[in-house]
Length: 198
Image 1 (tube, rainbow, N blue to C red):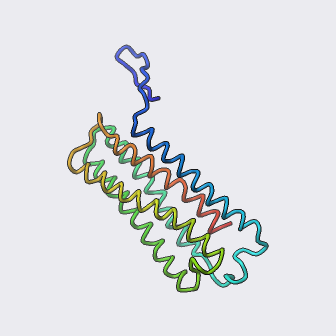
Image 2: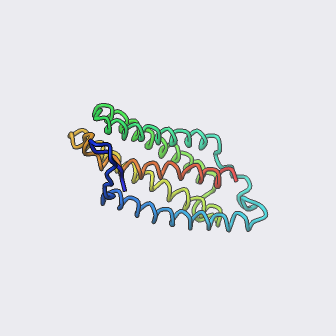
Image 3: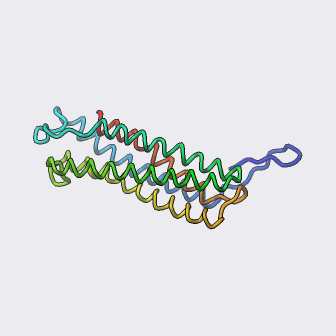
């Protein structure tokens, strides 16, 4: 339930909107999906004395570059939050700026990640190269698909914003996109620590 204040200062409770309820249900399902994937990763990670397995000892995950990429994605969470704040204040041009910046940061994250994957595949780490490669690409790839879907959603919202569809009184599209974007951003540091540093 959302709270607002009426003219007399008494709190009014507004029902949860269908859009917000829908995104929360979606995030519940996404949380279960990633919990299962992370659980699978941890079973194999903890169950092996040497990690990566001996067959992949020479392959180093790009920790430093991915660390920088993590910072870019976290920055996109801030810019998306600023986009939402801008429309709450009816600052439409600021909304355009922050949405575009967020989209660019999301695309940059995906581009850097794609470049890393190209290098790893060149070194022999593929989906078919055993459990290590399989878990890496399924877990990290699943997150990349979610970032890509968030970027597509964001640019749809950006297009709607350019057409003047949002205002301080009506911004459900920005709100739901922000909730999903923050979820995708918040999930990544957990994956980075587990897969790249653990």
